[in-house]
Length: 339
Image 1 (spheres, one colour):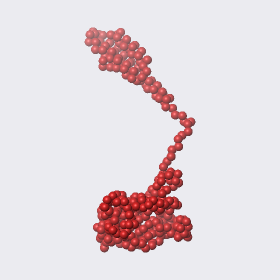
Image 2 (tube, helix red, strand yellow):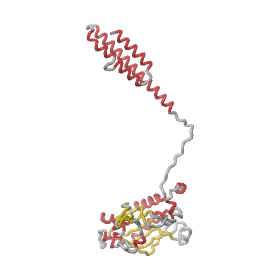
Image 3 (cartoon, helix red, strand yellow):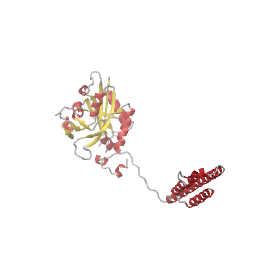
Image 4 (cartoon, helix red, strand yellow):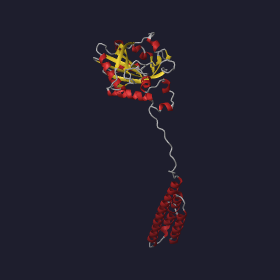
């Protein structure tokens, strides 16, 4: 058995020297030290030895096992180091090569305007409300005091899915949904995409964006509306901005007004931006009609409110001095990266 153990040690060390991979080391370990390995086979024959020889052979077998395990660990470390060096050499990066320039995107001009308007009204205590773009005729028209066959529907000609489902023409339906599900006080803005059957030209599109606002509470007056719009205009266009209201008619507000702001290009003296008038129209507004409040389940004798709405594209065109709305949707990066 002494000779067997010595031969196992010599043979294993010889194969360890020639091993070229971790897998070969594992095969050597299993062959000599595994449960069915050569060293284990020798130990199983120790029962035939005399009591005097057993401890001597047992000690020798343990020594051989310890030597082989140490040599296996050392060989594994050396092979792992060698493989790591070869991998590093094969994956070397030439840091002298020029890098590739990465282009970074930015917000679309419309998104910039929408986000800025949102921040202004969030700072005034408003919340953001959203609703479906495919809307019921009831919410889009009837709840806004625009019954079937009403003349104002011609102005807001839209795309009909069927007789009762339309692509919304404004974000006013969101206001109706809010009033039907929330009790006053209400203070929300409703941004979103809207649709009208318009021909595409420099100032019209069948798809555009609106932001509407709604306040309903006890004691809300026209003075509150004017003060809110002044604060908004000055936050958006500068501290020296003034506003003016011109009488108008909207079915869902009473009284109603078109709202102009003093031209930010000339301060009101007249220029190309305002076409010499000194004022630029940016939104419509008014006090919420008692009929609309009543339709949405709010007592008009207890509560009152105001609403306003603006086209985002119109503000973006004015803000960035763009003369054609189509430029905003053609996705020409050369144009968009200016803003």
